[in-house]
Structure formats: C-alpha cells, structure tokens
Image (cartoon, rainbow, N blue to C red; front, side, top):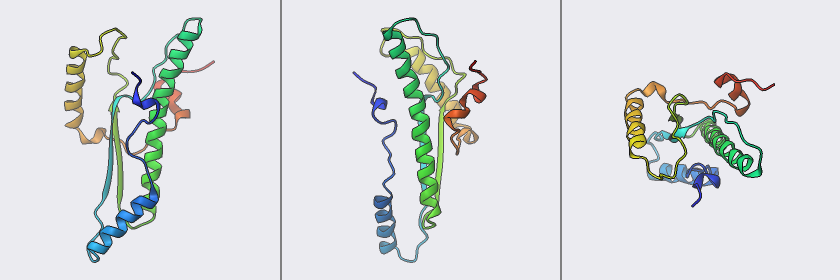
Length: 159
C-alpha cells in the first residue's frame, strides 16, 4: 500500500490545448452565449503544512521524515500549479476562471501514528470540522503562499 499522493497530489491537471478544445466546442454549440465560468475548487484532505518533528539517528527515521515533508510540500506545489494554470487560462480572456482551495487547519489535532488503519473517532471529528468549515465560505482561499514563506507563517525559525 502506498499513498497515491506520492505520484500525483490531485487528479486535475492543466492541459491548455485540451481546455482550449472544450472552449471552442462550447462556442460552436452556443455561438452567442456567454462562456460559463470554470470553477476549480480543491478540498485538501489534511493539513497543508508540515509541523516539524524530531528524527532519531538512523536511515529509517530520516527516510520516513523525508517522505512526510515531501508529501506536505508536494500538495502546496500542486495547488500553486493549479492556481497558476487557472490564472493563465483566465488571462486568455475567453473564459472566467475561479480557483479556490481549503485544507484542514494546521491547528486541528493530528492523528497519532498507530496500527489502526481507520480511526472512527478521529474521522467523526474530521467530519464535524468539515461541516463547520463548509458553513463559512470565507475560509476558502484563492492564493497559495510560496513554500519559502512557510516558516514565517507557522512561526518557526531555522538557526
């Protein structure tokens, strides 16, 4: 079993040529109609940022930690690609494009590692959080901060 996020964090990719063909197809079918807006709304099913963790001496600990960091920052990079793709498509002027995303807040308690694959109590808390978040549309963000700015956002310093 491997997390699919190792290979691709989101199922949506930007193929501008294919999207252009879709736009042209809509124009042919409805030549005088206004182009409908494209909405790209992404739900990240976990915290976007890594919170840091000490490793022990040894390759196993370092490798595990490296994969954890890779997965978190890979999601941030995927969101940035989607944001830039949406902006590029919108800049062509033929179609209005809206990009938004939401993730589990960093403050939400993280699940402790265990052998239990499905933790019903944790999932119930996550579900309740999702319902709370969905009731507040202002939580959806439209810009993704650069990875380099993460330290300032979470208040850590590297010395």
